[in-house]
Amino acid sequence: MKNHEDDFKHRCQECDYKSKFHSHLMRHVRARHLGEKPLQCYHCTYRCSDRTHLIRHVRRHSGVKPFRCKQCPYRARSTNNLKRHIQTHTGEKPFGCSTCDFRTADRRTITNHIFRRHMG
Image 1 (cartoon, rainbow, N blue to C red):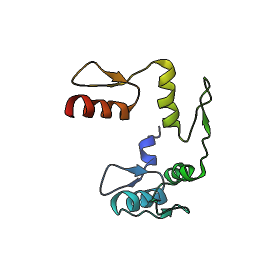
Image 2: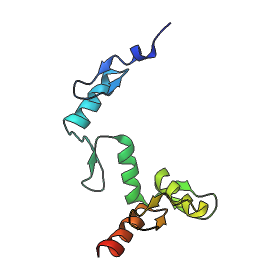
Image 3: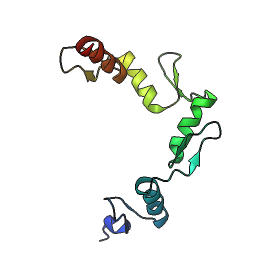
């Protein structure tokens, strides 16, 4: 019986990363360990090593918001932003203050709360 672990024969010497493809390993090494950022935004100086990060970044310039909320007119640039927004409909508040009982759906709101209520 074949062990699928054998499929990942290309292994990084610096960390636990492994891949089926040598080209993926080389891309990993250049991006993670050599700090290379070969992809650049056409609109600004932003550089990165991952195509999906570049696509998400370019949406900032274009204003494209392809992810739509099913419960209201809200649109988002990324699935993470949409998930965060959906929490406003569900009432989910995963971020809690460690000093008091305050909870919120948004990470920035909890950071502002802590600064204003407990540090300011």
